[in-house]
Image (tube, rainbow, N blue to C red; front, side, top):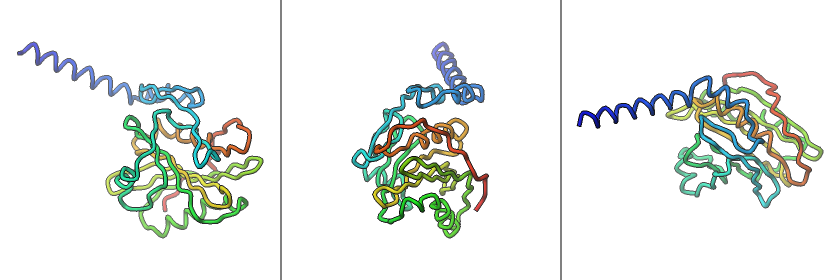
Length: 221
């Protein structure tokens, strides 16, 4: 019995040591040198394969983990109990990471998409809760404009990193997002930024993905 207790204790100590190593600064810094465009990377020592996936009748595409599946309407309702539920959410049970979109009925011409983060700022100011804006960005391709806003918001129980992006698809606003728990920001932020950089319209040739330029610094609303 004593020998069994000692074995259980040894295994628990080994597991705790492994968990510390997974989230250590050294591990995170080493993993951040990898790119999702390499295909398979390590996220806290877990191999994750990324691939491009199309949606909205194959009109747009974004890179995401290969194991991500589409959440059911019930799962989305549980994940977003306060309303503002997205149309689609993709995630899995292993990663603290989700992506998705809402294809709105708002008609906004291509030339005004670059100003859309300003509209989001106004909406956040009216909502009340504190939101820390980390950056705003915009990139133009041959035919399209994609703007984005990077922020940290607060729910009842936790802080959430949210990278939202906006585009005009057939004259209507497409609002996409990539989010995760703020406590994982050190490892996940660069992944989210690369996912955003991978977003494209399929009516254009695939271009080299460029990291967001992070034009605006942090601001608390």
